[in-house]
Image (cartoon, rainbow, N blue to C red; front, side, top):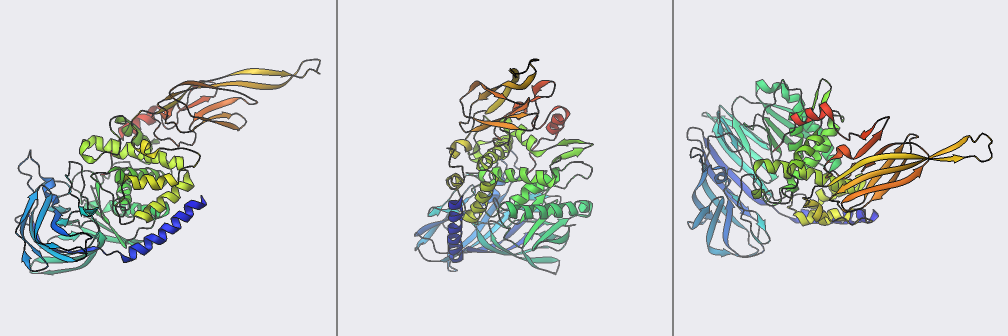
Length: 595
């Protein structure tokens, strides 16, 4: 593993050198919310750093169009463009809007190597609808509400067609904003510098720093409670009715910040904000340095709220810092986040009922993930873009199946190599946009050299993988001491047969273990095609169990229930994770908790 440490150190030095010389485009926004007309309007100024090619056109993203509902004409959202200026001089009137894309034709070419400024005057109509962008019960939830440059990829603008489940794709910018609104409300966001009220209007200044977007909630009746987790400020906005959830919100956020520093790398910002009630439809939602939550139900004896909040805080690393394309590669965001959600939930709940623990009946996150993930396991690979999935398929394939595949990759690496991998992955791609091949190339360096693992095949896995033990039997080989007149038994050797079945073998080495009543065990490695097999051997002790994959490496094995066989007076399949009433309770609580 020494060569891996050398690679990591060399690349870290390279990243630090590159990062120190890289300059971000800057965005300044000045906007006013008119609560009577449900419009937020103003202007945005973008100071572009020089591009490496000549530009004859500019492209911007207008996400509010994404939230229109063709079947419901009352849900109508748009951005009206009043005027566009280049370098404070020329009005650019030649532009067109195609769904979420604003294309601006330039009168004069911008030469490569030249910085330039664009100023856009806009008017955004806010729909009256629950969700991530809209007005509901006098609460404005605003995401991607202003014109923002289209992502710059491979020396050109990336124009996405956003599908139902698509989330905004953006570059990193240095964003600041001045926003005015009625003083009966407050604006909730990270990076608030000042609030001033006069004449019934409050003006808030924000400095968002290095970020992908600027989202916030404007509403009345909220209070702010702040605490410090190490050197990070955690700000929780809440209404009086939800004050009971403040302590647990702060505790979960702090725990996840600390654990993700251990698992991946340090949170690079000074603040994390959670708005309890910021999302006015069920679930929770991540934003840069900010989480919106649906208020928890006080009477539920579950950890649903904590599990969902864990997921969304983890998103600060995978989306907020390592910013993959959520339209083309949603698994690089959601599958990875869900993998760490499973891992951290288990630890935060001390391994006991990390979804629920009701009168001793427990439900765990990994079991629900397996049930949901395998419900559509053979339907799609996790590597498709968001446009191919329905809402349910997106949750079961990308979140749940994806977390099982990521868990399998980490299991093959082993704990030590996996930890090194995630820390290097984070440092290498921090504040950048890696793609699938970037992940594969780096992960391959941390795979055991003795095993040929095709990571592309594993990521695109669709076959139902199932290893199972069908029988464990034993006979006796009696050894007699011939020097004894009474033929007293000197030793008994057991003749052992373990029958097992493979369906759609991965082709990777899998351990088959026999355990004995004297505490010893024997392992053998099986690599075989589909079929029925028998492991025959002799041993001095009585067998008590047989297990396939005893270290739980291959989470993509569909049915862990019959991966073991126990012998304790009665022979039969031994439960690995769940059985009986526990399985029923787990099924009841199986759902997709985060967004």
